[in-house]
Length: 231
Image (spheres, rainbow, N blue to C red):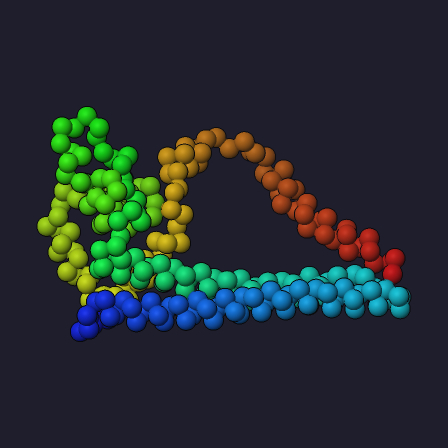
């Protein structure tokens, strides 16, 4: 997927940033409205349930309606929230690109100081790592593993430049890749996560695991059944 870069990159980035900003504002308004609708929906159902209770109606039916209503509006609310977050990622993506084009990126990225050898005679003078360094300029990784592989790629500038030339006109593809990367937690403790995953399983009994999964649903059924005859 590509987008022809017949226009100046700064103009293209500013246009896309403006589009994502308008989308973010629209989704923010929709998010607020849906939150208000859900609140009114809950209050209305509670009031309706109180009225039905006085008329000897069943609380179980009202509770079921409430749960289904909250579920449906919750799904819709989550969709709006996801769209809003995607728009925010678009804003950050193009803001970062404009900062690089304008030379205002210093101090806004990862300095990579953990990769700097303090005992090296002249490593600090090369500005490879640290605030305003080459690493901060070119690094766009969002995971610990990605950041760890970045120093090695700095030694292959030629191959990197060829890859940049290939990706330059593919703005839509770079946008999607940037969005996917932004969804990943920035500071994932990869080594700790792998160590945790390799630990032996504590809960080895399959029946116990099944019972643990079913208990919340059983509690919900008992709650509804317990409320049924009392209205």
